Image (cartoon, rainbow, N blue to C red; front, side):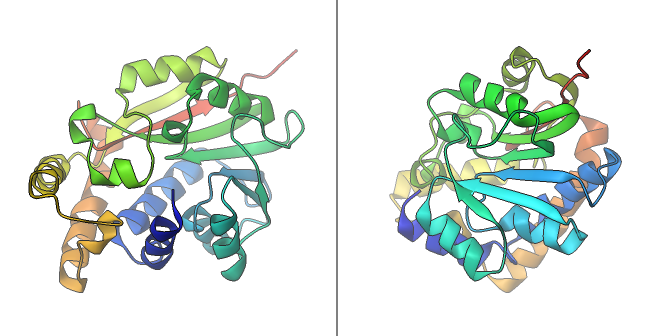
Length: 246
């Protein structure tokens, strides 16, 4: 992402409905997986610190971040989140089996070699460790946000699960989420494209009342998506485990 996009996200991540809702979803999945607060955690693609904020709130004591952008690292440091290392998801500067929990949330779609990225996630994950991964779904949702975020692709659940499994990770669960807002988001993105509305970040389309309404809908969504397992959604979540070795 460019500097302007990081600046927009830095403002939005603390309160915008999408970031707040995702943190609630991730925290619930981490709790269900039984991850302790003293676990060794890696957040890949920290951006401006959305997940690092969650881990700090949850009381995790051993959290490391990595991002390729100096802008992202600077924003995280400014907020007191870290340490955040500079590095590439496809060649991370960490030893094998360094982490008990790895998050790669909306990062794999940024790289050319998503298969290699997944294998790197598996490499740094300890035997028995958990990976929480999210990616954007459905090419029909491609829009301005994908462009400014420099996405390479959007995924479907089963093919993406195949990439995860191909890295020798055992999938515990996978499902689409943000399905309740799929229609409105599709329509908004088509309208933005049709009217050529200039946006640095989709978070610009917001106000306090709209944010409250969207957060309420999204909270209902993330509570029901793991149970309903809808056939579509704006995003895909995968929880995977690295098998114990002999």
